Picture 1 (cartoon, rainbow over the protein chains, first blue to last red):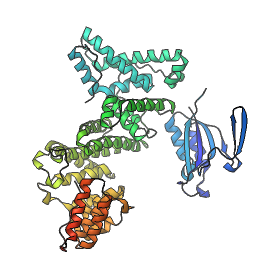
Picture 2 (picture 1 turned 45 degrees about the vertical axis):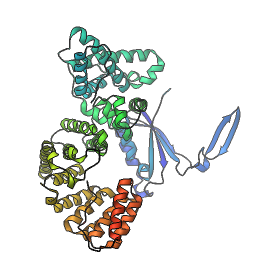
Picture 3 (picture 1 turned 180 degrees about the horizontal axis):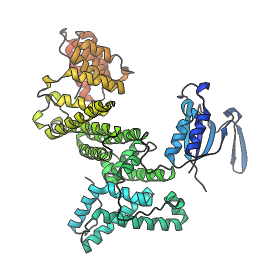
Picture 4 (picture 1 turned 30 degrees about the horizontal axis):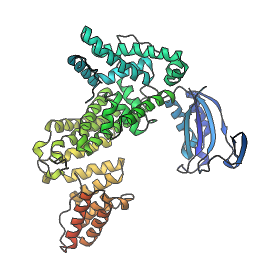
Length: 109
Length: 435
């Protein structure tokens, strides 16, 4: 099953600590459980652009759709057996401590 | 309590037999059918259908030798049929999702109905489901309650419960919640989640005499969970501890509730009404857990400690003979596992009885954010009164009364405040707000 892990900031997260930001270890856990299909960091919300089309008219605005203190800082598309494995992979991600990870199953067309 | 819907006109004995089979074997039946068809909604619909067919078939040809096995076989066939049809129509294929897509239609030999109840219980209490959903799904799937029965006990509507159950089954399919027993490392945490569901069912019944039947059902569920765990596994200890706790609390039910439905406090209860068998069983369970834990050097969990405390309250012949030192000691151990305000307040009350109000005050002053809790102020007031500080006690009673959730509590606290303000400066032996 494919899941997208949305890596989010979270005001309740532990303070960021560079020495324990060990993405390599996370990648190891993921490799044991399944596959990494895609993923990266995302530029901050200041660099976001929102696009809407209403009544045939294109509306382009600066920033994200909703102003929040929590935003998506990155994403990973992974392939694992089931939700328990996805949870295990998400829990091993350093940003699960500094922020939070939202686990969403891919819904294929 | 659980009953399958009975078709009008069916002969009573067959319907009764069916109801009994469903009541005792619902978990076994559902577990076996889910193992074959994977999709929970298909399994639910198929078992419902098998129950309806059973009424006709058993009336015509007699009740089979193995009624639960008959239901499983019939439901499996029906389930596989439903999945095939769903596969043929795309719209339903989406609803019944994954099983068809992933070709998981495992066909198990019909004679082998393995005991899959542990993974059933664990999946119903999966942390990816909300607590309310876990409770509803467990009552429906494991114990065989109807949505209407769940709605009555949890003050909801049948439609709302039905919707919650359908959503839960859809989430299991779509989110990829696995139907399996987790690894030994993850099992204790997941069993703790199951025990949380069991205890929530129990406390809902304990808190409301009108829903007392929930206590018996929680005990039944607690027994089942304990029975399904390996006797040597560490997680079994807390399952035993929880069963003991529920038995010890339930043992006082007949004495705990007065004729008008009002709660009778522990020291005023008629002890001859207590259920001695339940207390004896709880004692055996706690003894077993403590021995096992000591022998294997395993920590004693919070349910076992709470059970031990409950038993200290019911063991003595009279309330005066209560061993407060032992209770305070057990509360101290419990506090290391759970420093919630309610636990700490109970510890302070016990320590106040055991070692004097000063010790109780030290403990109660460590309650996190106690200012907004009426129990905090009420316990403090009792301890201050016992410590011979009537003015401070009166002020604390006033604060407790202002925060009290109900009229009865408020009136009792105001009365204590007035008695102190009335002038007597002599400290009376303080009592706790315990039940």
